[in-house]
Length: 420
Image 1: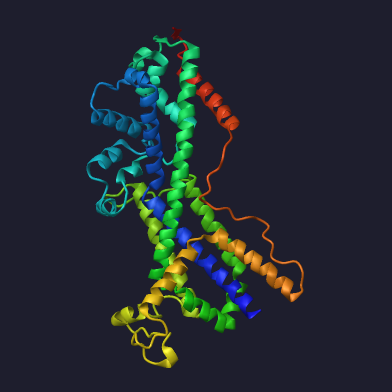
Image 2: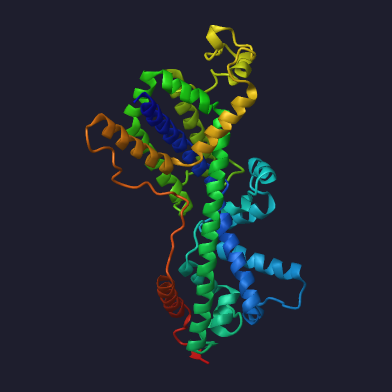
């Protein structure tokens, strides 16, 4: 039973660490505005396909098909920017994004990541209906409705294209975008999953979470095992809350923004950086709480971190070999083994909270059976992986296409216009 209790406590620790990592990932994705970046990427890829399959439509909208590739890409990039612009942000902020890159931290991030500070001036969601309504006012939509872009003053009396032709063209455009939207969302979630794994490994190294030391501590310390298992309900609740926040980020939920941002920062940037700093502070507090209480052998009081921190303050290494003074040679495990064990711990954390929750539920049932109590801890609600894309059948897509076509047709048919 001692081995089983150790495994149970270890899974609770993994759930705890996965919860913290999920919070860090959620805050970082908001800070880097990755969702808005992928929205624009999907729209741009959609426009490239329209150029390939429907070049005549873009030609009517103003694209010079005889121009060089760089010129055509510039035109489509500008179209993607127009279609994904966040119209709730004032024009001065959008213009500033094109000139100053927002701020120094943003510029620094752009050098070391794929971060584009202009993404903070873009929308974080773009449904098929939303794109269709934006296209309706764009040169492309005007080309569908009138055969060419027209000034707004002329649209009420202009002759529109015949209705069946417009319905076919709008249906084709919406169907194409729905496919690219699904592909972009899947790509975004896949990259978020990879980023979660990288964050988990970095988290393990920064906070000195060595798998071998953790297992030894739990196997030798009954109080630590009991303390972790006793808090399992709270840990699982925290995990569900963290996954909900992360899922909201992946599914484009937008938080309320602070009323004012410092000079040089937009509201959305300020909110993103505040969220990241708060998440980092909460992470440090949680790690410190478990380390100080002695529940988990992690943090800066353990080798090798303590040998570095000791130079800056009164920190004593608590994991010496047989009470000897910490020198590095008295370690039970050399540095290379520490690196390997910490890397393994990071990879295990990167498996995610839902995985460890299922493991915990299975082990808990086994422990209950071995005790002869019957029943067990059967999860009443499956924790879902936040990165799994939602599959949609062709019928639902076609139903959405018909609905959006009806909406855009109603919005683009002038009350006094003439059909061609």
